[in-house]
Length: 146
Ligand code: NI
Image 1 (tube, rainbow, N blue to C red):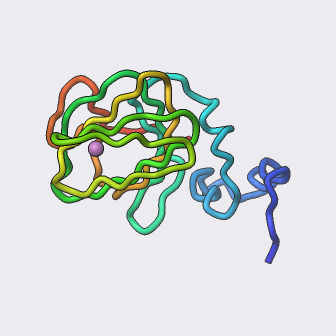
Image 2: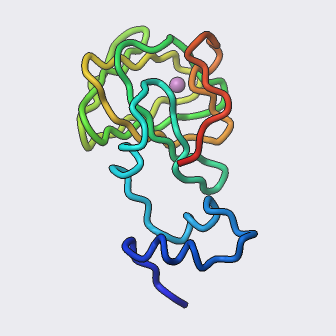
């Protein structure tokens, strides 16, 4: 078995058979979160950067206030990579600082609010829709994979 280190990534990808997609090959090599974060600048538009066991790892940037919503059957994990944001619940709110994560249980109404830009890793079932039951203009259905 060959161990692949990050600097060898592109050479390794070029050597793979054409029928192996780039996405599939990512599963055996490192993913650099800051490199992925540098690829986009818009807000409230999650990108998928990993997939395992029916769950997605997504990167997203928040700025401003999102839509109140809940997810009927998915728990969501928010891990702050850079910055901080406030998760509002109907009866209280919680600051989530850099290096911290928060899990929002299914069925609990929530709304992330970021006074300044925050960069977040989401870990949640692949079925999770960003606006949950609320819909609206911020809903993203087909997510880009980085
Ligand atoms: Ni949510």
